[in-house]
Length: 425
Image 1 (tube, helix red, strand yellow):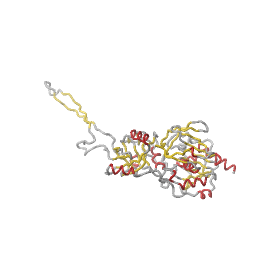
Image 2 (cartoon, rainbow, N blue to C red):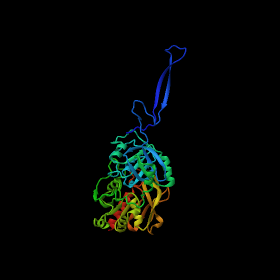
Image 3 (tube, rainbow, N blue to C red):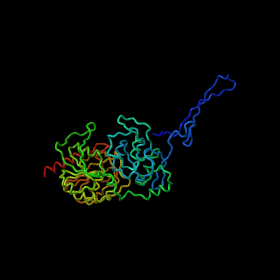
Image 4 (cartoon, rainbow, N blue to C red):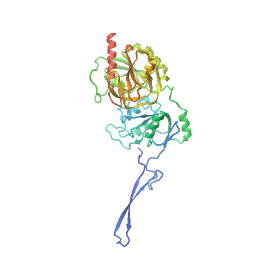
């Protein structure tokens, strides 16, 4: 991994004779020489440290010089900031980040390396990673690989030594911006034109992250990480999980709560789901604009009222549209593991993990739909319920990964709803 230092201090001890003193009486003078990045150290074959070799060009015309790690090339994406203090590996493998560059506000990234147990999907879907400081060493007993090597093998671009604080302030003021990452010799104007000609709104990103055929999921949360063992049902409840970019820990939590899960593609027909006679349906998280996937909205409409339903993130937004409501693009979205949410049913405040750029407009929803959770940062809708239709949803991630476990009990609520409907049937 490249050295992250910017300057080298050479300490030189010089023996200088003092006049009118014997030759053996000497004193030492220490000279500290600071070398700029344009200098070179004789005998070391040029610069012994990494120099700026990458650029992030934003659609507002700003250009940010940086140093590259991971893959090389040129990539375009929407820049969003994530306020999580840790869990960068789970973030890298969250399919909901497809089409985006993730800027980590925590300045020091890479110190725990990478392991192969914390991945949320089988690959990385995000466009690139933007960080302030890249750790030059790792210190974690689970580490199997450095972050730079991990990204390089997966062809994911990363940049560091860039002012992430300044970029975050710009995103908060102006909203999410399209950017271009490049290590190539393209002109700034060419990269700027690429940023201004690309758009993420209205693009179907779900089809690129969904599975292609149904499969069974059986893995539960590992015993060493299990934290909630109370009230789990003894019988298996059959759940069909629509993969719009589903995270593995959502499936693990459902399995730990006693569910037998079949994961199906995003285009799986509602009629086929009903033939499988599930006890419940999960609409998962996923990337992009819910308005860009009308086929998924149609599936939601067909299943509402037919079977108990739980929606998470993208699934929540699709349910909002399926109920006749509207969604809208937020200024810069919610990305991080520290968002306070007010649970309107019990009055408690839950600290939640969130990752979305779109939200449901509660004023557009029909009568009978309840807003069950509200984001305390901006008052946006964070949860819905339609009791007469056996429907519930959350805008955020109850499985966290990374993040707090305050909302994990919602999986138990979904299980209770399925059990109740099954008993009444």
